[in-house]
Amino acid sequence: MTAFAFRKASYSDPEHECVEVATNLPRTVAVRDSKNPRGPVLRFSPAAWAVFRAALTARAGGAAMLAHRVARSNGCAAR
Image (spheres, one colour):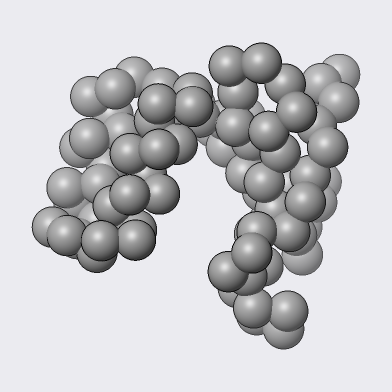
């Protein structure tokens, strides 16, 4: 089993939108819902994670653009 070292994302709301991120393994950024730690984990390549974060920060083009760019980079897989 993969040993991710999750930490709460800096922009997570302590009561509602809680996201945890793990960057301790090479070539992998893992993301999960802190309220469901045994639930699915999204795995991104560092490049796909950078695209995802930039799109969220800029809010440019909405979710469709974001999904297209991440899919095109082929760096994300749900687990």
